[in-house]
Amino acid sequence: MNRKYFLSLIPASLLINPLKNVASETSLVESPKKVKIPPYLLPGDTIGITCPAGYITQAEIDPSVIQMKSWGFNVVIGKTVGAKDFTFGGTDEERLTDLQQMLDDPTIKAIMCARGGYGAIRIIDQLDFNKFKSSPKWLIGFSDITILHCHINTNAHIASIHSKMCNSFPSDWALAEPIQIETINSIQQALKGEKMKYNTTYNTNNRIGIAEGELIGGNLRCIENLAGSKSEVQTDGKILFVEDTGEYLYSIDRMFYNLKRSGKLDNLKGLVIGGFKVKPDDAGAEFGKTLIDIVLEKVKGFEYPVCFDFPVGHQRANFALKCGVKHKLEVWEKGTKLEEV
Image (tube, rainbow, N blue to C red; front, side, top):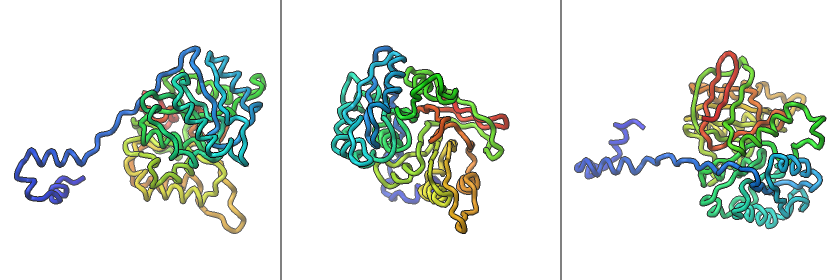
């Protein structure tokens, strides 16, 4: 804020006492709140599996249960696994109760969401995070789980893990592609406290630069849907990553305009564009701009680094990212590096 303009707004009566003036100015500036890092997992710790969004069967999560046990963790399966209420993993009340019990249970050290889909927004306002705030634990997932990542980052200031979920674990590891194995192993690495570090190839449309800041983001549609709510993502001074799937280019353009018009792009430290599976334009209704065109148009005038094709999103190359944790983003001619600091 321009200081001269700021002082012009203060009543003359407050300028008589310099000390009162300083106190008044300071009270208008909210200091950033430090993010809490949940305890990293040790052998024998327990991971809970629940379905706050879409439906999934016990058989579909079995490969993930086997794998997480091989990492040395115990696994508790929530009542919503196998429960079904149309597209949801049980009724709103069942999903709410299941997640709430895992948030409150001190023996559960991490919560793996079984799958995405849709549904977290229907229960987010009924969840009680008081025990979670006093005894934080890792919440894991992506896609619709972006709702939970953004909500707890904004309101509880607790770190979480954006990553693949139970429905992405291969049933036969011998047949799994290397990238599938690497991304799933990145979940284990994040849970055990390893410093996450990723290098990607260079995209000629990248904008070169170096930035440090708290990492936050997720599914772009979910982030847009949270605008104006108490779960709204806070981006000032942060590195924002976004991804999406099944959207038309005009819809992606609209979502990026939402970020721009709401000021979410103004004070970023850096922008990371993950995977975007775009719906082909309808014949005769072509949008005329690419994803790259859309993004670069919205960040024109800002100087922070921007990278494309980062391995996160609805794709095989979807690595674990620690939301709320400070990272360093380096974008240069040889590639991109995102590193936890």
